[in-house]
Structure formats: structure tokens, C-alpha cells
Image 1 (tube, rainbow, N blue to C red):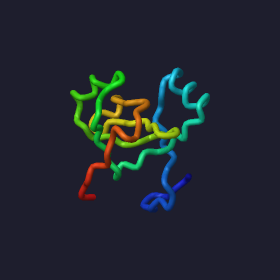
Image 2 (cartoon, rainbow, N blue to C red):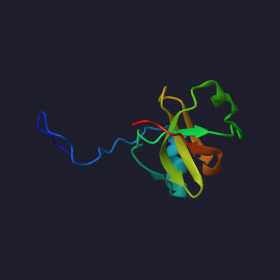
Image 3 (cartoon, helix red, strand yellow):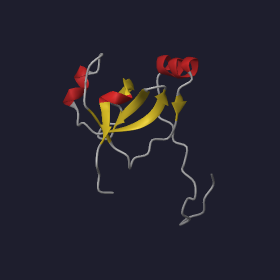
Length: 99
């Protein structure tokens, strides 16, 4: 997408979250749907288990950047280098925001 100075974008830019080779392979093998995260839709994790317990120490505000079946990939809104690459959707809930 090429824009002129001061022009307002009419389409959402495609800003995929970079991942390491392992997770790129998982996404390709299983057919994950990866997309630019919607920063206006914030999620909270209700249940930190299955290797995600350490994530309880970071602010509990996340955005979704991928999905597959009943799983999602989360990016922390405070520290984008902090991710939960796979968590069941039933373990999170949408946080009410005032955007």
C-alpha cells in the first residue's frame, strides 16, 4: 500500500507478528490463520497453565494475532516480545475497554 503524506489509510495494513522458525513451522503444518492483531480488542487470560504459568507476572492484557480450531496466539500489549503462542480460547475472555 502506497500512501501520500496526510492521506488516511482505507485498508488495514498487513502487519504480521514475526515468530521464530519453530512456530512458523507449526503454523504452516497445522494451517493456523495468522493476521494483523486488532489493537482495540483486548483479552485477559483466566487460566495460566500448560507452560504459561510464568506469564502471570506480566500485565494481563493481550491481543490475538492467530487462530487455529479452538486455540489462539496472544501478544502482550505492554511488551510485544512477550507472547503466548498457543492457548485454548476458553481460557481467555475479552476485556471491556473504553476506546
